[in-house]
Length: 285
DNA sequence: CTGTGAGCC
DNA sequence: GGCTCACAG
Image (cartoon, rainbow, N blue to C red; front, side, top):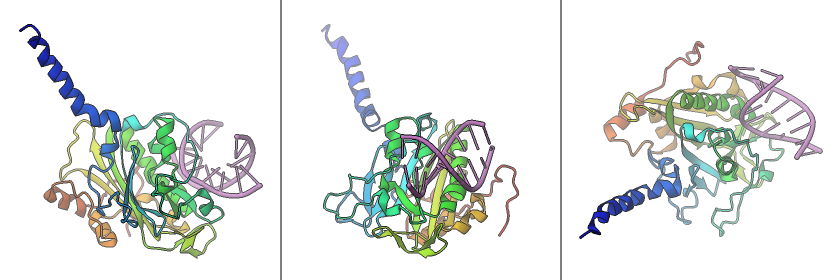
C-alpha cells in the first residue's frame, strides 16, 4: 500500500514532461507556422516549387524553379533578442533534397547588383550563435535591391523589433511576387547568377500580440506592406507601402492567417494599418 | 578575414 | 560616434 503514495506524483511528473516535450525539443519552432501555411507547402520532394522546410528558427516554402523561398514565416519575442554578433556566414543550405541539382551559393549574388536579402532577419535571431547563423542559409535569401533591403525593408525590421521591446510578440510572414527588379546597376534584371529569380515585389505581414494579453481578436494590430524590389523603393518610408492582407491574397493566391477563426480572419485581412509612425506625417497617396 | 560605405538614431 | 544592413578584395 505504501508505494501507491508515489504513484500520483510520479504520474504527474511524467505527464508534465510529456506535455512539455515538444517545446523542450524544438524550442520555439512550433510557433513559426502557428498562424497558417498560406500555400499549403509540404516537405515532399515532388513539391519542388512549394517545398516546406521547417527549422527551429524559421519555416519556409522553397521554390526550386526560382531558387528562392516563396515565403518565410517566423515568430519573434523578447527571448529571441540577445547580444550575439552577426555571424555573416552566408552559405548554401545543404538540407535541400540531395536529388535537386541546383543549390544556390553566395557566388550567385556576387557582382549582381542585388543584396543577399534576409527574409528572417539576422537581427531577429541574436540570442545564440547557432540561431543567428541559421539566418545566413541561402534558402533564407532573395535578390533584393540594396535600397529596398538596407533602407525601406530595414526600417520595418527595426520598427518591428521596437514593438518587441515594447512588450509584444510578433508573428511574421514575408515573401516575394512577380519577376524583374532594379538593383544597383540601374537596369531591370529577371535573374542573377546561375538562374536565381529576381522578384518584382516584396511583401510582409506582421501580427502584433501584446505579451500580457496574448489573444488574437478583431482588434489585433496587423501591419501589411507591399513594396517594389527597386532602388526607387527608398523614396518612400516603409509605412507608405502599407496595404491589406486581402490585396496580398489577391496578388499571390495565398491564404494567410488560415489558423485564425474565419470571422476574425476576415476582419483582420481587410484592415490597413494607419497608426502614425514616429510622429512623422504620413504622405497619403 | 579586414576594410569600406550608406543611412539612421 | 555607434549600430546595422551590406559590399569587395
